[in-house]
Length: 270
Image 1 (cartoon, rainbow, N blue to C red):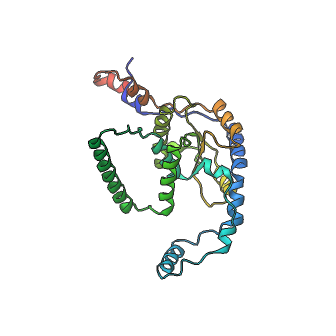
Image 2: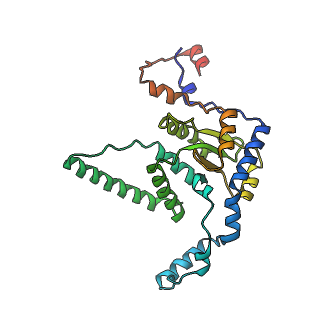
Image 3: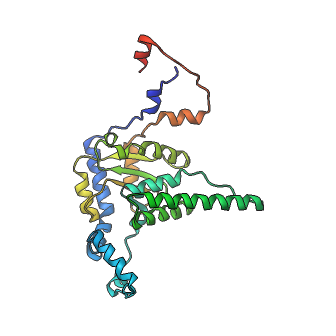
């Protein structure tokens, strides 16, 4: 039987009981605690946009070249911080980078010049989009560059994405996640597909305490994260895939034909 449009476009989200959610949350908090300890011990909380503007103004006047001895003495962040994405922008940028097709190497001079011209145009478009973006800042730019470098080094596959919202399907910003995760998994057939985990109500407060930040909605975990083997294995064993039917249908490359239904038959198919 040919599936209808509603069935193809509606993803099936796995159900996770509260006991499993609590276990996953506890393992995740234990994994992320070193990041929060480092942040609360060595990093001064942000004072907001006014502080950034004042700092930029001082740098323009030549006062920004003084070396802060305290910053030099700050130890590097815990190793786990390089294997997680924290927040909406960071996680989505990594997923977008992993689903981009790899570009073939240009061998002819004309192909090289065409590729370079295309890259320049893409760069201009990206710069224009960044200028027009309301939420663009230095942090999101660094996240984008970090995502590109991690993907190029082969170390950016997100095995698990955890959401602090118990019902992410009702939040508009989270709706692209199942599709992006499915496409990213399709590009890494040798690895287990990415799991989406909706944590229980109240999980955000515990994650914020572990990370030392005021808000967190999404946490992504890389496939090769150190110390995360137990968490990843537990998620793979107990959390089913988010099924996105139309991705499978599109990959078959089959012509399904047109099926138009009228009257009572059409109402039943909807």
